[in-house]
Every structure is written in structure tokens, then in C-alpha cells.
Length: 283
Length: 105
Image (cartoon, rainbow over all chains, first blue to last red; front, top):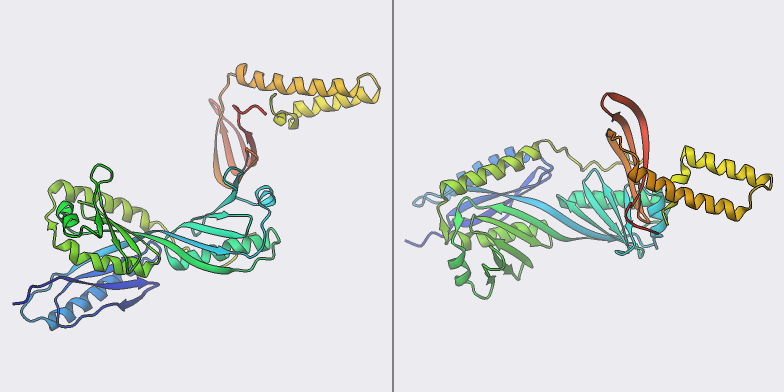
């Protein structure tokens, strides 16, 4: 019998549309991954539907092996994007006449915070602006446009929205098992870097997705990559690698994970969708 | 040298108007008026730091806007409630201009 390698297939959920990323017939589908973003609340039901669909397909595909269906939520914590307004910005004028701005001369940039979507925009006098702290790629676009619109409407700059690109995405996910990171780092000496005296996690780099993952012994993994899709593919890629070194969680580990999940979902329920692209907050 | 933040207060305006009146009647040279104002800046800073003992706390409904430029914080709040021992005052809108107390310009 061939060794069953649990293969991670990811379901990307963005804006309510579910697309099955890598359906591999004839192999045991070990885990279904749900990519969760903080904004959408109806995704949980979509995830459930897709998981049911996937487990049905997997069960149909495999007669002998009983596939292990595990749902791993990927939370996107931070999306950083950068764009240009193609005109010189007078930082002092923005600092004196703008709202919700801070200008520290030692940094040479004006920091403006938006409430919805919650983001911090850093503006340089060259017209380059960076938005950080967002939770999804569409929210990043909305926030960037909102900042440019503010400059255009309130401060009368001839702005042009140019060169928008998502620079960095930080995602986290928790595996349903603990990981033996010492053995894991020894198996991949060129890709993994583990210095327990410096940092308690293994730094694993995936060159093809340009992703850097930090794998912790509790089973938590943080990924930084150039896009949300890359984050998702990186998790899918690492899942079988890490699954090999799984170890069952102790009761203390389980309690810690449950507590952090309660904290995260408790705050998520109260957030509203911040993707409305309108000028209502500029008045 | 203390910052000239407190010239834009009721007492600061009264002082400036009095000095202007004296200058108008040529009873005070302008250089001396400048010195008076500088001394006022120092005196009011020292008095507020050392001689004011009462504590007042306030709570705002919303921070509408904030601004930080040239080491000056400007805050616009709405729905402010001041509380001393008993409920003292309410304000619909409030503007706070704050400078660094330690920095000597």
C-alpha cells in the first residue's frame, strides 16, 4: 500500500466565493484549509459547505483510506501596500491642515490613520504612500483610494492613483497538532533555520512563493509573503512537511489554544465590513 | 524660556490688551511690553506647575481629530464631561492644544 501523504488542498474564501484550488483526485486529501479574513462573517458557513463537499469528493475518490478532514483557518493579520499619487506633497501643509495626522520631522513623513478600514498611511513628500495594518487585499485597495481621495478633496492636490501594489501580507494559522521543531529543522537544513537561543521558532523559507514562515512548537505558524494567495499556497506546501513531525498536544497546550481562539473570535464578531467604498467619512 | 502657549488665554489676552493700551498712551516702551510678556510666560508656567493643586478629570465621547506637528498636539473632542468631586461641567465640543512640558525652546 502506498504511504498516505496527507495532501493539503486549500479553499480560498474571499468575498464569499469559494474556489477549490488544488483538487487532486486519487490521493488522500488530508486537510481542507479555510482562508479566513476578519471582514467576512458568512465565510464560516461557506467553509463548512466546501468542507462537506470536499470530504464527499475525497470519500468517493478513496475507497480504502479514510481521509482525515482537518480544517485549518488562515487569518490574515497585516497587509501592507504601497502606491503613489504622482505629485509632490507639502508635508507641513498636510500636517497643519489635515485631520488625524502626525508629522515627526525626524522621520520625514506624515502618518495619517483611517478609522474604516483601520489603517495607518505613511506619506512622503515624493508622493509615495504606504498603508499598513489592513486585513485583506480589497480593503487595502479601498484604504489606498480613500487616502488619495482625501488628499484630492480636502487638501486640493492633483492626485493620480498609480502603482498600487501589495507589498507584504502577514498571515497566521494554527495547526491542530504540536510540532517537533528540532527534528523538523534537522530534516530541512538548507531551508530551515532554528536558533533556540535567538528565537523560539523555526524560520522556514520557501523560495518559489517568496514566503518566510515561522513554525512554532505549539503548532502556530506565521507566514509573510507578497500576496494572500502566496500565503495560502505556502501553508498548503508546509502542511505535509510539518504533519510528518506532529506530536499530540498536552492538556496545557489545548487550553492555551482555546483561550487564544476565544480572544480572536470574540473580537472578530464585533467588527463590521469595512469595504464600503464611499466618501461618507470625508465631510 | 517657556513656550508662549498661555498668551492665548483669557488672562493672557487681558494682559496683552492692557499692555497695548499703555503703549498707546506712550506710558510703556514696546521693548518693556515684550519683556513683560516673556516674564508672564515664565510665571504662568511656574504657577501652573507648582501652585495649582486641584485635579480635574474629563472624559470625552469621541476624539474627532488629532494632529501632531512641530511638537504640538491639537485634539478635537466632542461630548466632554468634566468631573471634580461632584459633576462639574459638560462641553459639546472641546479643543486641546498641548505642548511638551519638559522641552525648553
